[in-house]
Length: 356
Image 1 (tube, rainbow, N blue to C red):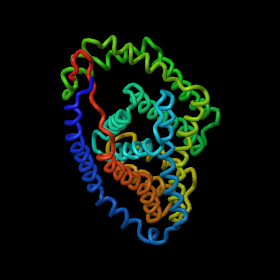
Image 2 (tube, helix red, strand yellow):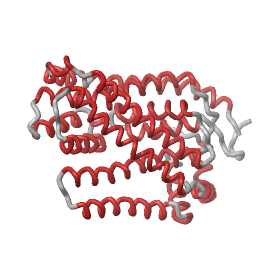
Image 3 (cartoon, rainbow, N blue to C red):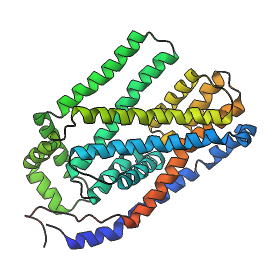
């Protein structure tokens, strides 16, 4: 049943929580101001002579890469029959990216929770929402690993047979994991463990905790059956793969265009290494979005390759300014806009414990 009082309470406290998250992210970004100021001073004159056509290309590529990730997410939802509009999915994607890249400590987990919650508000069922968010992240990671092996092998002149073998191991391994995890028996057992563990999360209503504990096996069977049905066909897999690979290519193009905007030539192999260091810094999650570490790593690679400090610093600053800071700011604008414009999802209990 639907609890109207719970929906009213949710409508009051949820905007407050969202504004608190935005405030924390803004404070985290403010702490980066001294470092950014230092980078601007270090970059010096090259920033005053930027090539604006290349800057425009860098911005378009950065936005396009994130937009394609959102489209991949939309295509995954369509596998389960959920057809959300492009603006809705893009809004959720940009806001999710902002949370992941700017909120300290819990940014990654918080971004996943936010995306699932927003999809639930769009009346996407919980199994499909969770599955789509999870699979999108996995595909993104697998694609980056495969491209990283290819790029690293080319940059450091690893024999092609070794590179191809490495990519094959990643792809075949991912496919094997997919087959195991989507096996009905494995999936049901995993869902049962998750539901039992979830029943102990503080803050959940008593009815939900009791229901999940008593009906864990039944619920796990129902949820696993739902998720087991979410199997993209061959054409959909090709589309998903094309979207995620193109998304990463556009991200790398952002770096190429940022360097071209500064005007100091940098070997492509150096940019490949720098790009991978940036992505590794982000993946470590020591600081949200790899703040500080990513720029320092990219700058260090370019300086070590013989690029002068000023143009190297300018290139790193322009790239991170677009791919991290600008996209995060756009995402937070979308996030704030969605606080009061998104629909309120009614909380549902089982009939045994629900209220009229």
